[in-house]
Amino acid sequence: MTANMLPGNRRVAFRDGFTLVELLVVIAIIGLLVGLLLSAVQAVRESGRRNACMNNMKQLALACHNYLSAYGRFPPGANTDRLDGTSDATCFTARIDGATATNNDAKAPWSVLILPFLDDVARQQRYGSLDSAFYCLYQDASTARRATQFQPNAAFKCPSDPAAGSSCHTNYFACQGGGSSSERKCTATRGILYDNGVMFNNSRTRVKDLVDGTTYVVLLGETKYCGHSTVSGAGLAYAAWDSTYRPAVTFEGPFNVCATEGGINTSSLRGSEHRYGNQALYTPGTTTFGSEHSGRGATFAMADGSVSFVSETIDITVYRNLGKRASGVQKRTTP
Image (tube, rainbow, N blue to C red; front, side, top):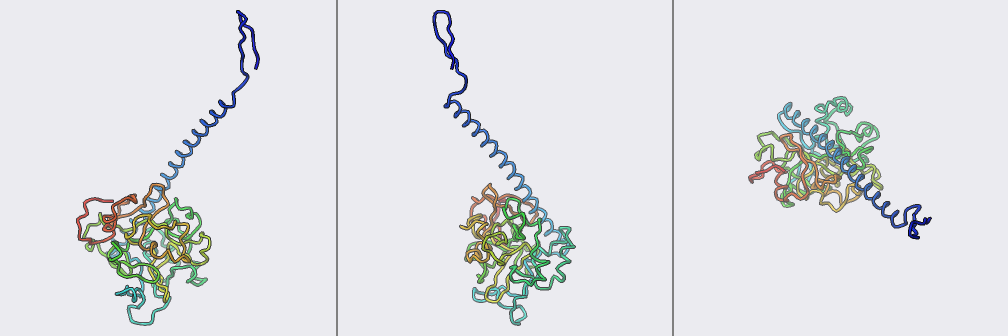
């Protein structure tokens, strides 16, 4: 600091720089501006990822509609040799033909059946016969089968999911139905079965079966509850976008389908904690839709092909009825 004499013998001091307080204030302001900028950038990026996810869902819904046009019905949740069962004790345990149940009783799921309508005929042909055995978990399949099944497919990945880059898991499930727990078809040892929706075990749902109207019935929904290979501790017990129902004797249950029973994102486990070695997975994996989006909701496709982002604050009764093809109530609004 220097000082100069002015007329009247007054001394004026001149500073050579900032004081510490001024410097800290400037740093704080710069930090605040950077924080606001980063938040804006992250919001724009997430908006882009959510739009990409909705586009994925739209393509899957259109493929289901093209399947409908070709075969006169929506694809089944999966083709299997198993009956649903009439009680929890018999849930997905008996074969349709009365023969002894085996681990090879499940066939192609809906996600494989629609591949030609996603311009991916070559991938479907690599499986061979669609009436051959498909598997739910990587650990269930032979080495040869793993070369075709359990391979990544970008069409079934949400870019907001941290595991979307390398894993073969899926972020999109077919809707098998909906309602409260009392409306379940049955409870298997590994998941919940519904049959009041559009796509479920051996379903043959036609448009005329959607009594509530295609605009008001969920066709597909987003999930973060698929056990995948990038989860620590998952071992070989993980599933994929082309996984089917699991007919394993004493460890059977549905996969690649879900119901509108639990509220969106209401599972206490996050997606990164879901794996098939974790017994807590099976119920939320088949009864709870959810996503990794920051908007607190998930993406859904309705049976008319429309796609929307549904808030997790939607009324639970309204939400449960959206999973049903014939709820018996008047649905006045779309989600």
